[in-house]
Image 1: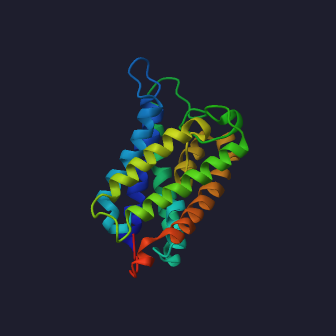
Image 2 (image 1 turned 45 degrees about the horizontal axis):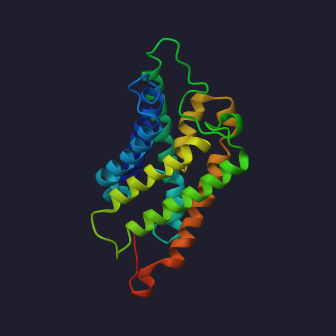
Image 3 (image 1 turned 45 degrees about the vertical axis):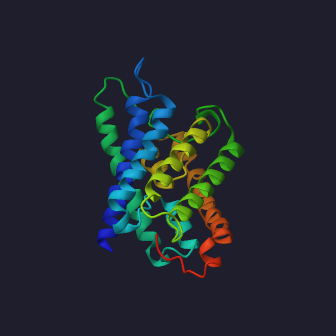
Length: 238
């Protein structure tokens, strides 16, 4: 169990450092910045690389909503849910701290409102309101779980799950960044919000509630579609 939790800590650390780090350090650089497309790709690459590196140890969740969805789908033990959540949140906070130290090397940097924070209303990159943010996070997280569960099904092509999951998260960010700056991951939102303060903390509830609802919903959708049931196979583990 300790190896699983360390793997979840490390994987979530990499996701936040790579994804949020690309947004904070590289997205807005004049003339050579990577923009939203680059940030979306960065998040996808972090998950893809860690799924291949650590997936055989912990299952490669790196996200409380994914852990919940896998539990609802019968792929993950409920006894391990809270320890996984703790490791994921701890990894996200540690990565946000490292990112803050790096970003603070630039004179005048402040994480307040400038730290890859998730939000709605005035805190939304595109000015989208609460309902839009809620629906976006629920729907995108649900589809992320469908992608994960489908790509790791016994009937799926072996060895390609990490690519599908990484590209899926990239697409999710391309859709969601203008609306909420894309969470679909409560740990990712929590790590940076603790240092971004203010509005990010006040709105953090949505980025727990919506992804968790979406994760459970995605699992229910997948269970209704699961081809292993028709094939008479028992789809175990992620």
